[in-house]
Length: 203
Ligand code: SF4
Ligand code: SF4
Image (cartoon, rainbow, N blue to C red):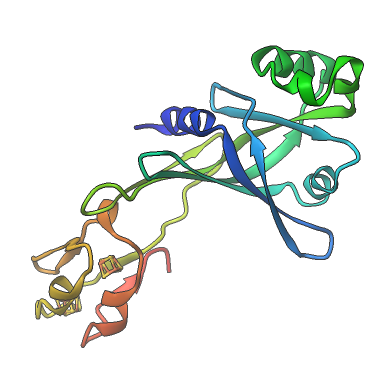
């Protein structure tokens, strides 16, 4: 799995939840189609009269999530930008997504503008395996923030975190180690370590 596989999986899910924030800071989400995925770029479109369009213009930061039939989730956060060459992109979107003609027949398609997400962070989260599996990527100019928890040298090796971890994702050692790819980020180990040896990553 790499960032392009993640983006392609997003395209295969097709109908995804797309969250924005409006000019008053209120969150909104709706289901939209991902129209084109290519070379670390995700392309979609919307009508210039829609609140969605206005929100994208005011706050270009967006969050997208989708789940496939296998209980595998892709999450993406990034910034959108409006694409130039509107007619070229809209024609291509309609060519690759013919059902769009039922919604916007004939020339009405040109009320739509094309947008792209060209940089951001992606997370693949697989709930179908035991333990769960997660993998994160950045694409474009984004850098990846560290999430979850890590165990520091303060660990005294008591094993409490390992015994109680709901995914058995902690290995014994000096110090004990969290397998990041199998961690839920639930915080149970963090809250219960007797010597506060567990800290949030990135802090
Ligand atoms: S609970 Fe804390 S001290 Fe005990 S093994 Fe885990 S990290 Fe180490
Ligand atoms: S955060 Fe939760 S899942 Fe992750 S290691 Fe700690 S207890 Fe286990």
